[in-house]
Length: 158
Image (tube, rainbow, N blue to C red):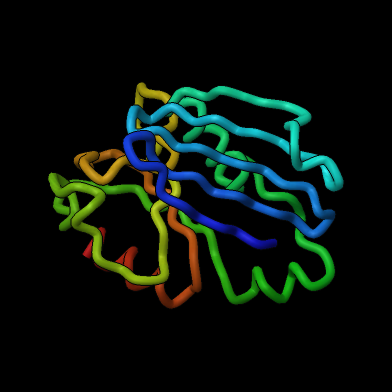
């Protein structure tokens, strides 16, 4: 897979993702948070086969699905080896957790990623925004190399 990124002045950013089959997905992320997805089939890069407009919330939900937050398929073949090095972990924040009251932006672990926040009584918050403040009872979905995820988990819950 090849990803090319470019700045669109006054609009946002554009990502061109070319997959192994030669098909291409162009993603335009507007400063407003809306997203445009343009799908091009190999051999026809002039006109998109499909165009999809997403709100910020829809894009984040789709991202969570693609990242395996809501469902992770059973690993087979080479994927098992890669998954043995990486992990996805759910961490519930209890009273006294050091990160409660802090924002997502303040989490400091390189190599581990906060994929989503499950907040009681609310919809899943996939790809949480940096300004989101963490609260007691949140369940955080972390992913990355096992060591990095463990360091981030310890930073969050002490």
